[in-house]
Image 1 (cartoon, rainbow, N blue to C red):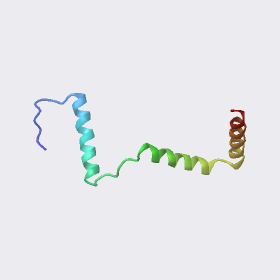
Image 2 (tube, rainbow, N blue to C red; image 1 turned 180 degrees about the vertical axis):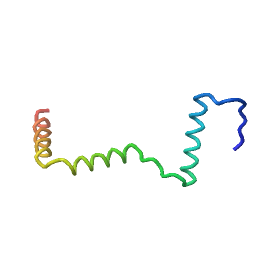
Image 3 (cartoon, helix red, strand yellow; image 1 turned 120 degrees about the horizontal axis):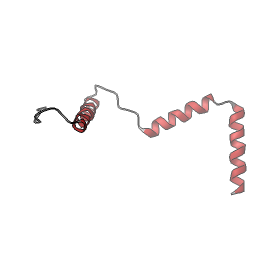
Image 4 (cartoon, rainbow, N blue to C red; image 1 turned 45 degrees about the vertical axis):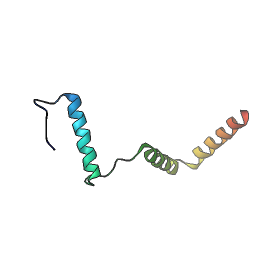
Length: 71
C-alpha cells in the first residue's frame, strides 16, 4: 500500500490505520476473528450456569416464578 500522507500521522489517522491493518490481517487469515458479543455472552452464561450450585439455581427459579405470578 502506498502512503500518500506527508508528515506524521495524527492520533485519529494512526488509530484508523491500525484498525484497517488488523482487519486486513483477519481477512487474510493471519489472525483469528474476534468473537462477536452474542457468542461471548452465551459462552459466559454457559460457564456461569455450570459453576452455579444447584441451590442458587433453585432459589433463582423460585424468585422468578413468584415474581412472574405477581404480574
